[in-house]
Length: 337
Image (cartoon, rainbow, N blue to C red):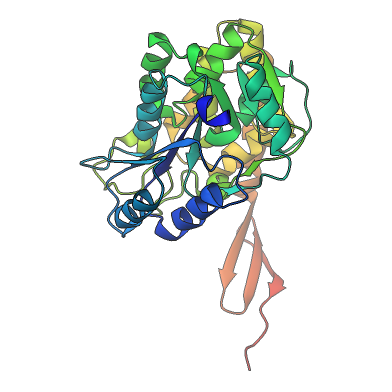
């Protein structure tokens, strides 16, 4: 039975409404995984989430609530889940977040893949179509934590060590993903999306935004380590991919930072969201010579354009300013009645 094969970990912190929706989906009568063992790792929530979990645990015996004494951070909570999975006694484990959307319409084939014991990782979320040997797009997809259902036996002490080390770069779970690439693991890719990213879909826009708490730093203050305060999606991916041993494959993965888009587009998005010299250095050092050249050219062009053309937001519209000499309104605001 599936409940004997699959262990689920659900990570949560101060998202009571989203958590309630997720638990209702997981435990509904039509849910194919409603009887699986579900362990909720609660990061010392203060919004009533802990009480909600306790209420659910009274009704469902397959739920287990572990509430940390203090908020250890979302990334450390991922590491806790990986540690627990290594000794859970189940063939596969799946780490879920409290704010994503689950749809089980096409779950049957995923369940069959689990029952075969054949695959090291079963990918249940994808934004574009790719094959089971397309490692750059596979590892990029696995940056979304719940995208993979993993075989437990692939967690070893090195994976756990790397996961904790990679907390600084936002994706501790990619320690396992990179390990699977290193051992040339066997991947199963679902034709349909079982899970869809929720609130974290806005991660790119929130990445490295000043004075705005993001999903990596929720519950912390200004004393947080400067690296964590200046997290950038693209430089974090590049640093995470340094755990891939094969140099050619590592470079291919570093060149595929924004799934379905070109490297040049990724550089543009990086420059758009970056404001830290640390991220710039991390990004540059992690790519090959050809990509370094592209990076330099795009960066020069980007900042040259910014020095020539500026946009200004005013009460009556948005203006374009060229060389601080020529100004014109390009988007007028409608007057409110």
